[in-house]
Length: 259
Image (tube, rainbow, N blue to C red):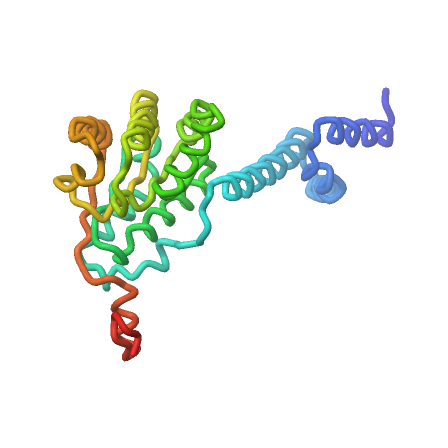
């Protein structure tokens, strides 16, 4: 029969070999606590595995956040719903449960610049990351820049794979600039692939759907894109004054001149 010392060293070796760093770090304390509380070996093992799983989940969140492309931290708690009464707080809270991600549904925020579309998109993205989902966030301008660079290097399929793989893709600020045919086609291909795989998209735009013909060079392509985006989707139309302009006015500054 093995002695307790040998069993302890063997356990440490197993934890090291399996790269279970959190469990290894906590091992002495958990064993001591288990002895004091007369816990069974199964209870002690469960405690160690729980600590390891929690630590790995935290590491996964940190990695997902680093790779997500989210540059700013915007929370739902920090959103001023009173300043934007056209937004249903109950609806946003429902979206924050992330059922739309599990169902492969889309969320589209429409409204003029500065009304909080990107804030809400980032907030929901962070909620998704906190719950272990992979998220990729980028503006449509960055999407165009990346796709053109990838096309020159014959790596467009690689970029498409990167954009299709995450659980949630966020496309921010569509509509500020018209798209060329090749850029619009690539966007359509990404949306179509995600539609086929039931993977969610959050999209923000300063254009109404009726104005999407101004963004795309081909109205048929615009219609086909909207058809896929809206098949299973929640659209939130935000009406109201820009937060930035309101803050400038409240500070006594002229919206245009700053004087």
